[in-house]
Structure formats: C-alpha cells, structure tokens
Amino acid sequence: MRVAFRCDASERVGTGHVMRCLTLARAAVNLGHEAVFFVADIDPVLQQRVTLEGIRIVSLPSEPDHASTAIEEEHEPGRQKTEADYFLSAAAHYQVDWVVVDHYGYGEYWVASVKSAGYRVLFIEDWPHRKVSADLLLDARPGASVTDYADYFSSENILCGSEFNLIRDEFFSEACHPAAEVRRVLVNLGGYDYRGLTADILDQLAKESFCHPLNFTVLLSQSSPAFARIQKAEYPFSVTLIDHCDDMAGLYRSHDVCIGASGGSLWERVAIQLPTALVIVADNQRLQAGYAEGMGLVKVVADYASGSADFDISAFRGFVESHEIRQRMQANSCRLLEKSGSPRIIEALQTAKPEGVTLRVATLNDMHDFYRWQTQPGARRFFRSPQLPRWSQHRAWYQRVMSDPATQLFIVCSDGASAGYLRIDGSEVSILISREFRDRKLAGRALNILTRRYPDTRFFADVAAGNFASRKLFKRAGFRKTGERSYEY
Image (cartoon, rainbow, N blue to C red):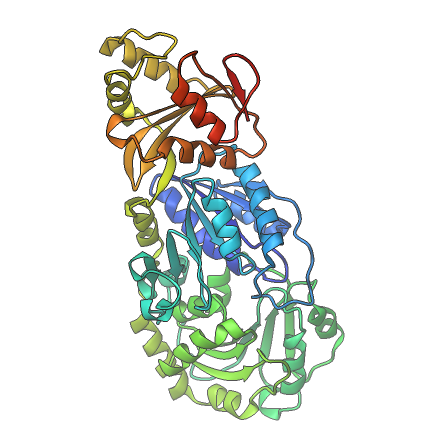
C-alpha cells in the first residue's frame, strides 16, 4: 500500500500538521508500506526531518499568503479546486492507494476533486463543524467521540479518540520526573505565533515577582513577530530563545512545566506527563482544551481565540506554586495515554471497504482474475489476438507486463469487488469489465476516473471496426474520433 500525505507545511500553521503526518507515515513504513509527502512551502528543517525518515517529498506550487485570515479558516472553493488539481498532476506519477489530507484550508471541494480521480481519502480533523465526502475521518483528540460528528459524517467511517492518537513513540518511552519546585519553564505557543502572544505573556510575567527566580526557554520561529521583541527585551528572569528543536521529547523532559498552546502538541505533553498551563490561541482548540482541563490534565490560563485577552496570572501562580496540582496532572496523564495509535490507523486503511467505483494498481495476485476475464465467452472478440491463450502463455505475458514501466494495469473495483481491468500502454487505453458486472456503467466511470487522475496526459484508444459498444463508451467518456479506429482524449 502506498499512502500520499497532503499536509499544510506553511509557516503560519507551524510544524503540527507535518509532524502528525510524519508520525503516521513512519508507522506505515514500519508496517511495510510506502509513503510520499506532497507539500508546498515547507521549511528546510522540516524537509530534512521528513527525508531523514526515507520518505520522498514532492513539491507543489506555493500557496497564496493570506495572513489576514484565521489559520483554521477553510479556503474558498475555487482555490481548493485549483490546489486539488496541482495535487492530482503531481500524484499522477505515484500509484497511491490512499490520500491523507491534514490541512485546515481544505474541505469538501478539495476532497471531492481528489475523490473524482478514484483516490480514497482519509481526512484529518480536530474540530467538528463541516461535512466532507472522505472515505474515513480521523479525529485523533483524546475525548473525541463519533457523536461529535453526528450531523457531519457517517459514524462507521470515523476513527476517533485516544486509541487513534498521532503521538510519536518517543513521548511514551520516558515520562517527565515530578518537580517539587518549579524552576524551568518551557514556553511554546506554536512555531510561528504570528500574533506575537509569546512576547505579550512574557511582558506580563515580568511584572510578577514570583516569576523572577524562574528560567524560561522559549521555542519560537525567527519569523514570528515575537522573536525580535523577546531578543531585544530585558527581563527580570532568565530567557533562552531557540528557533527549532530536533528532540521535542528531550526538551520536554528538561523542563518542570510548560506554558503551551492547545494544539496537537498538547497531547504530546500529556503523553510525556509534562504539567501544562494551557493557552488557547484558536477557536478550534476550545473543545480539546475544555476536555483536557475537565480531565485534570492541564490548567487553562488564557483564551486568545476571540482576540485580546489577559493571561490569568493568579491561575498560573497557583499552578507553579502547588506541587499537589502538578502531581495530579501527571497522575491523570499517565492514565489517559499509553502508546501511539498510528499502527491502528494504518490497519484501518488496509481493512476499510471501498465504496463506489475505484481504481487500484494490479498486483501479481490478480493474475488469475485477468485470465478469467480474458477467457470469458466473447471477451476477446475484438482483441488484436482473439485466440484464447493457454495459462502458461497468459502467465508469461502477465509477468512481462508487470515488469514493463511503459505499461500500467489497474483493477476496476465496484464497492471493493474486482470487476475488471484498465490497461495503459504508453498512452493507449483499453478496458474490460467482467460479464457479471456489465450493465452497471462501470467502464465509463472508470475512464472518467482515469482522465481525472491523469489531467496532463493525452490518451487514445484503438477501437476495432464493428465494436460499436466501445465506440459509444469512449465518446461518452469525452474521447473524440480522430481516425477510422482511433479516439483521443
């Protein structure tokens, strides 16, 4: 199985989408599958992180900068469709079985465009608020429930909750040690922090005498408007400013507490049992922040989702000065998360039953089906070689075709059942549907999927004289007659 990942790697979003997709991709590779990333504008450090895992990265055209829009806001339909076309053009060179999309800007318009090319889609969501026609939906937040999506998605196709978490194994290997007294504080509101909230919070803490003995480590991109402010500021406490970290688990373990945002990194801190003063920075974080606080895992100290807000100094002081509060957080954390849920997600991709008409790449295991289809009565009537082959001849042909890079074989599936095949020799297309699946218009739908999947390819078909059904089929699929026997798309 080959899995394509289309994740948002833009600086505004930070590393979260890429890292949780990388967690899932690593699980796929460890289970013997292949993974390929399709990204635009990826940070060089992140790019190196992905390639070091042996995973290919395919670059897409840069996405327009919309700094005035909210990070979690969905793109307008035209932009989604355009970017889906960019993806389809790039993905045409990789025979992928699943597309995993982790991008706040993409919704139904992007998903529908990709599904029209016969790809199966896993949609990663963390904020139940919209309908999408994906094959599977993943909400990896602990506490997420299928009932959250009752108005949006079919319950049997939802993967959600702590058993499907996207946390890397290193966050489970060794927990943070309980600190009787807080001295080291990590501040991490997301890599970019485009609103400069990190500097605002440090400015407020600088006014509080109980913070002066603390040592703060701030993880922040140099592109953040807060970076230069912090670099130039003079604080009554120690501040170490770093712009990236290759070992987040190690960074967490080297600190007593964290002031952290309520994104995906929240659950990393819960898994490693790092007590957290939680800051909400976006609307889509409120649901999981409320759940985490209700479970006694964190203490919410600020909500900046709706604009300006004050950092709750009193709540933070109680969190810092109470060893009992922090101990309870760690105890509750160890009961919630035990191991990564990524292998379970990959297993779900393998076992999910396809719906509708799909194409999958043929394998050696399909050899017998090909022989059965080609030897059905009347199947070879218009073949260039109409005589029935012996099994030994078919086997030699099939093995030769499977190793020929100029030929591609696809299985046409109907609700997961193998219904026939579609063959591409260079750019010549031929198709055969098994007799028991005739009269379902599968051939025409398969051709439409093919031309959508390969938007930059010019296909042609050679139709024998007297094969009126095939002539009608290719015309309906958008092929035009260019010769006595030839049709082009």
